[in-house]
Image 1 (cartoon, rainbow, N blue to C red):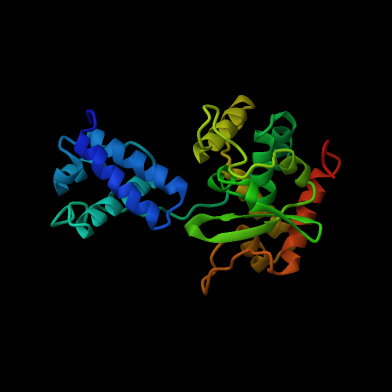
Image 2: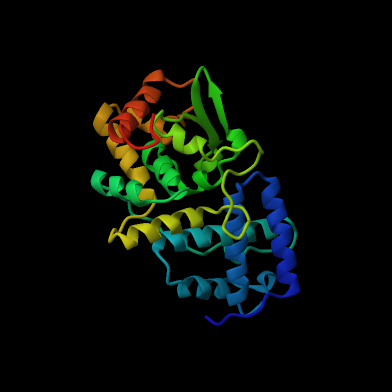
Length: 289
């Protein structure tokens, strides 16, 4: 599809929608992706956003050449925008109502191998090494790594804990493995706010974390992504404990019955399992306790 420059009307309605979305409590990462998706849509549509028809949106979706998962994500952002436009009185009808949301087939875990992870940790520079440790030994997602703030890190009874908001706006608090503490502590200053900033000085985005990790992996002939380290965390956790509940709790996944949050008051064996996992793999590394 051809692209066009955003009109003042499109810029205005995106700004108004983003302000509304922010007040509903969506994460900074979600808000950023929403703006970017609407900007790209506005550039590709032959009309302004509020003048788009069902046919315009169908043509747009059909033109996407990204993965099925990305099509689903882009479509969700567009549908959310047009539902809001109707509810806010900007439109009488929702032109996105009949857009299909692709079904994603179940994925299997794709954990990084222990030898490849060890090599990554050996050659990675800071802060990437710490990001890799957080993903591989605490199961953090890229967005959760990017959003870490100084005030999210606390100490209780001699243990370091990391709090945050995870997928689905679910809060969590996790004990930081003793072997990871020195690496994370090296980035702690006294000022509040994000631990890491983007190279250009703005807020660090999840895409930068995944991009830097991917760049290093490709340079070493690896075909993983940063998320493969989270897969490794879950796979290794279950292999060690053979306890699905402990693994589910550590991964912060929802159970069929309810959502289990890994919080400070959770079962002590979950924290113990994370400690043993990191201790077995990181013992003897320079800087580790």
